Image (tube, rainbow, N blue to C red):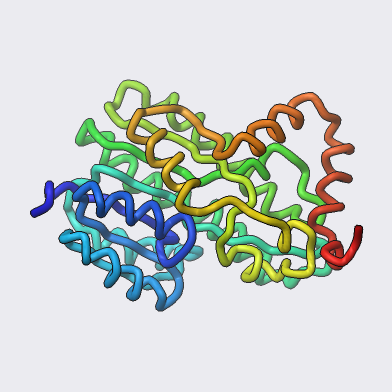
Length: 261
């Protein structure tokens, strides 16, 4: 038996999104999960073992058409939990990146995410109940040398989500932003960053990161940084000159940095 409440999770085929969906399933939420790859179907099969209804949709959430596919699948059902987690990264120097890949990062992390928040957030506000969790990043606190576009998109999401929260204070809908650090997912492989220091260093467990975000969302908190090391890094970023942060980021993300001392 389930509580018949509905959770929607984007980027749910792997990593943090898959773990967020698992937490929802364990708590008895029916699920609509979306991702831009066939693995979302396998994720749905695993989640169904928790005795909940799970619908999976493979859609390109970097496009308005893909987001509309997800909205159509949800139909007129009430949404209790909305996890805006879909994201994409890209390594290398900005001028060396393929423009279509750059555009896809921006459209996934910002355009598709904000469009979905606009359409479903309005529905939740009219209902007067619900919770929204954005997956931002501590990357939003520092200029991302050799990851300039990605860090820029996460700076947008970190800022946007908190502003939206305060616009929605009287609606009955809470907005929370989860800001993880480097996490053990397929992110760095997909971003073509496996020759970088950050790509090869030890990373956080996605299940732990998801639990941190899920608990903060359910408590109605404004924001949460996962992991004490990441909290220290953000605290330092607040008092460190931007140029210094940019050079620190270079050492982590510059191509070939994995082989350097």
